[in-house]
Image (cartoon, rainbow, N blue to C red; front, side):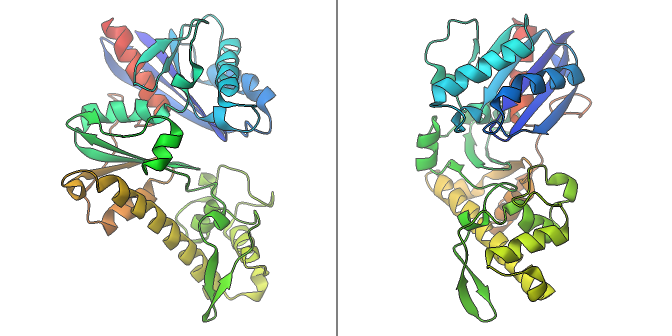
Length: 344
């Protein structure tokens, strides 16, 4: 048996998956997700990793993906990459550590790394590589708390044009909008209210999690990030925060007006994501015939966008024989390493 842990360390979440391989097959596993503001408490990363490792259990090898290197706790991304690598090494010493690079290869992190940026922001590559082996023609949509990845897969190969984040932003394959942490002011600049178009405040009053909690598309336990006002994660709290976007108190707006406000913001976010899909698919012959695999906390948004374009949707694959772990970046990275070690 080979035990592998995959890490995906972001700026706002630390995710990990432990898979158990026997004869080259991932028999079982478990995944965890912890909200953690790396920009606020980079010094606490090591202790959190130790806690997660203790919870998941021991491993024979580990593999790392990350996006947290971009957060402004670091002077630049290379410093962030080095810090995250060191944090993992110090939290779980003595275990071989690998990373996924921009070419989708598994590289051993042995202290002699060259260009650290070749292993920055590669979590989408691990995920898409695994999906390509299961669904050779599709559009992978990973809608997380903060961002949306749109990765076309053709003939079992990644057909993304960008690798680094700046390239992916330019080519429409990375959209900075997500199901939880996106400020409302990044989705809309105005709202319809009582028959007129009303500009909104550009303050950090409400986020996308408030929109979907108010609309009943997320449950309170799905609201894993911090609220903008530090108060309760309830429908009433979400409506209060959304009303403040219009510089108003929720008690001065009707229930219908508050629901319409949330519905309008949700509609505009769906339009952003749908436009991104059309951008990416426009360069693919018969792109609008591809099936869509939507994953992440915002998978429901991807499915809604696919329905708008009358695209077929497929469930993400389970990565273990027992179906205990489904597709995610940390699980995909662990799956790739487990297969490599099993057949190596």
